Amino acid sequence: MSVTASKESIQHVSTAQSCPSLTYRIATLSDCESIVSLVNSSTRGDSSRQGWTSAESLLEGQRVDAGMLTEIINSNHEVVFIFFDENSKILVGCVHLKHDQTNKCAFLGMLAVRPDLQTQGFGKFIISTAENYALNNWNVEYIEMSTITLRTELIAFYHRRGYIDTGRREPFPAEHGKYGVPKQNGLELCFLRKPIKQFENKSSE
Image: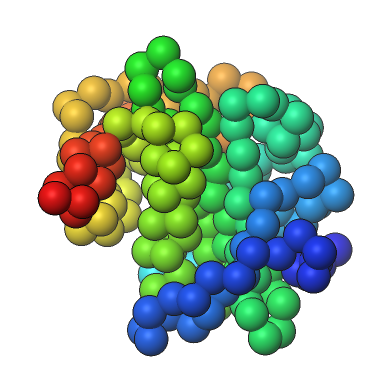
């Protein structure tokens, strides 16, 4: 099932010249099937190898399913953004944000860009959009995320976006295969953090 941008709900975003213009909106329950297809195909299986980074060699199975997305979309402290090509209306990418009000931070996850449309600056723009939303709507001080320690090229990408390794490590949650089935033992998650409130204050001085 493909999903296209709705004229009524779309928000237009002008991007830098290096990244074609995207439109985006908050996902609804009717988008679940398309988001599941996008996320799973961009991180698992042969299709993910079209992109510059993939977890295919580390994990098999799903990254997300419709039930998980339904819980996220129905939550009052989580949001999923979906991004479309401005002209073709093709679904290009998505990102998930979860608000941790107690710790004044947001957790960023499920960042995905269609493998055949990667290396065009979409990922950078999607992250920036999520950060701005969390800062402006939730007034958070930090954005946090996690990724598998062996995905060094992806960690380097996040470092270039200003995310710092916190030193925190946790075993990959392999129980029940909810987030995928490891192809090797001992997979670990590393946790990264970016102080966006600090950056916002400096830019306003």
